[in-house]
Image 1 (cartoon, rainbow, N blue to C red):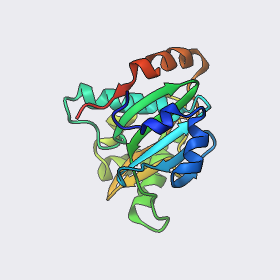
Image 2 (image 1 turned 90 degrees about the vertical axis):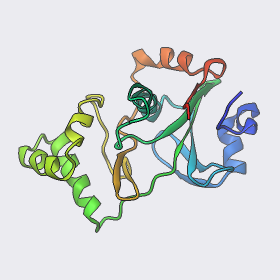
Image 3 (image 1 turned 180 degrees about the vertical axis):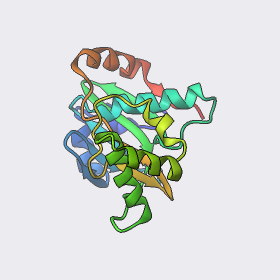
Length: 190
């Protein structure tokens, strides 16, 4: 059925309600709830009853990993599985850490925001020096991005763009849900 998502979540009438009652709640954004994976502290479970853009981006991350034969861009989160179950989207990914506001990584996040949102030439030049592969990576992102606080995280000392999309565009939602329906779930291949 699923390699990474506990059966109880998939069997529940409402996966989100079951998770709220049974899993450690880590936080919520505008469109999803995030829980600690019950079997692996290095993973989280994300659940949304909204067409949360993270899932479309997660699909892109999974494809990038597969296309690069195991050499995925370090700026993507590692996503293990995405499932659409009865209009609820459920995903499992690596657990990332927040970036401390007074850190060197916070300065890089500021450069990323200035470069990508404001198209600041100086920010791009500084970013090219600090993160040489980032410009190429950023060209793979969707045009309408959401880089507010918490959408850029870290894996150790590595910047990870975790959630740059607010919503799955309406015209893409149904085909996305079909691709990831419980019967044809997408699972990361280790």
